Structures are given as C-alpha cells and as structure tokens.
Length: 395
Ligand code: GLA
Image 1: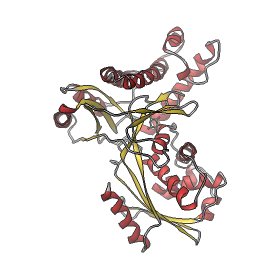
Image 2: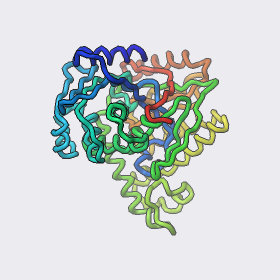
Image 3: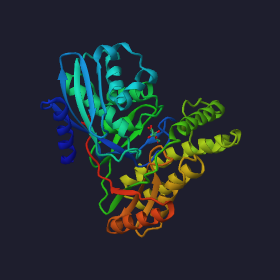
Image 4: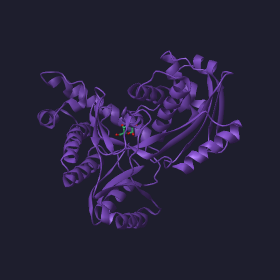
C-alpha cells in the first residue's frame, strides 16, 4: 500500500509543486454473493478490499478544480467551481471530462445538496486491476466524498456518501447501476462483509474471517465491452417480470426480491421465457445470500461453498451474464483440490470470479487455475488472495 501512497504523493507534488493537505485511501469491493439483485431490492453480501483508490488533495482559493490521475498519461483536467455549479447533472454535460466525470459528478451532487465548497486540487491513483469489475469507479466516487468531507469539513455520513456517489455514477457518468458498490466502498470494514438490504439500506456487519480458507479473486482480464447494454437489458427484463407477477399476491410486491421462492413457484408459469429465468435468478439469489450469511455465522463453510456454485450456475444458465472466460475460470477453479466453490462476481461478461479454497491448497490451486485458463482461453489471468480493509466512512 505504501508504494501507491508514495505514487499519489509524487504525482501530486509533480503537478502542484507543493505538499498535499490530506491523503486518503478508499477500498474497491468484491461481492461474495447476491449478484444482480441490488436493483431488485435484494440482499447482497460484499466486502471492501485492501486494493482501491488513493487520493492526495488540497483546497484552492481561486475557484479552480484541478484533477490529475497518475494512471493515464496526460489525464489532467481543469475546470472551475462556477462551471460545475452551472452545468446540468447529465452525462452529456460531463462527457468531456473523461475519467474526471466521477469526481466532478460527486462535486456537483454535493453542491446540489447545499454543501459549500471552494476549489480544490487532487491527484489520484489506483491499485485495482483496471476494468476488472472490482468497482474502481465507485471507489473513486467515494474517495472524492471522503476527500471533500475532510477538506471542507462537510457534514456527510457514509450512507449519504454512498447515495451521493451512486447519483454521480447514474446521472453524471450515465451508468444505471445499483447501490451495492458505492455502499460497501464507503461503509466496508476489515474482516467483515456487509449484509445490505438494498430496498431499505438497512445493513449489518457480518464477520468474514476465513481461518482455514482463502478467498481467491481471479481476474479473467476479459474487458466487459457488452456489459453496459446487457446490464440495462437485464434490469428491464426484471422490471417486466415484476409488472406481470407483482400484482398477483395479496399484498402487491414492489421488488422482485420481496417474492419468496415458494411464492414464485406458484406464479412462474405466467412469465414468458427468458423473463421467467431472469426473475427466477433474482428470487433464488436473494435466498442464497441469506443462507450464505447464516452459513458463515455458523462456520458452515462447505455449505457456503455450495451456495457460491449455485449462484454461478444460475448466473450462467438463467441470468446469462457469464461468458466463456468466466465459465472457464470457474470450471478450472472447481476442478482443483481443496476448492469448495467458485462463482463470477460483479456485473459479469468478464471481470472477476472468486473461489473459496482450503488454505493449504491455495497456492497450488492458483497455479493450476492460471495454467488451465491460459490453455483454454489463450491469454493469462491474474489471481490474488482477497484481503479486506476499512472504508473511510466505516465507524
Ligand atoms: C455492477 C453494479 C452493481 C451490481 C452488480 C451486479 O457491479 O455496479 O450495482 O448490480 O453489477 O451484482
């Protein structure tokens, strides 16, 4: 971690010719289970990671905002507080800012909530593998909230910061995602997962300490080109399903995940394919998340492993968001000695999968998965051991 802190400080002093007032780290995230249900009012179980985004920043009193990323050359963006005050909070207005649409979107959303801020300058860098689906954008948005809170003494709690970050992502960057990523980047805690009810934002910390096991994060290195359009397609398929079956219950359902698997079985024949399979995934994934939390609490790690497998199979067959690379890496993992379960994590179509493996077999499994994946897909993957970490807003 120190390397990245040095990197962001160096970048800051190269550009701004002084020492920063503050520096901060914000984690990325991995979702253990509860996939594609944070926009269906379901329960999710993500963890914040020791890989994430670093920022070094200071206030300015000339009304300018200067942002530089150490990760892309020539990625210096300059604008003014008055410009951000005046533009609309929509993707067209923010497109020209490139990567800086995320921090500037957060700035805009905070202004819209009445926060008073002057100009500022910030350098950022990230230790998350780029485009890997470990939430680099949510991490950058939440980092910006934490930086602005500290620089300007804002009254901003973690739940609000995650909502502000989501609004920036959705309205200014134009990505219609759920709340999971921003929430866990803001509120995650070392050695814990968060069980988050995405319909109410009620949450509880669930201890996640694997004594005899390791969680591997396996990056397929497949970039997720189709992801956004397919993501929106899945969202609207779920909305259609709810429209058809939501009213069929004594008490109308507002979210797909309010429907239990038992209730679903009674109405599923009303749904045409593939809408039926999309809804089935959402309903059963919600149950799997609750079962996972219980399994982890009870130390029933074998059952947790089986739930991971069932989640991936459902995402592959019913929700259809995996693809050749994620399926290959998950199959390779499941074939290894000591692996209890494996699944894709995040939006899918590429990015990362996770595998739960007995500690003594972790290194051997890592090597074998990498070899089998390369043989099948033709290029290298990247595998790391997950480490959880505190988020800036976690109490
Ligand atoms: C992406 C989105 C999240 C969530 C996951 C799928 O990471 O940003 O809101 O929907 O996909 O679980």
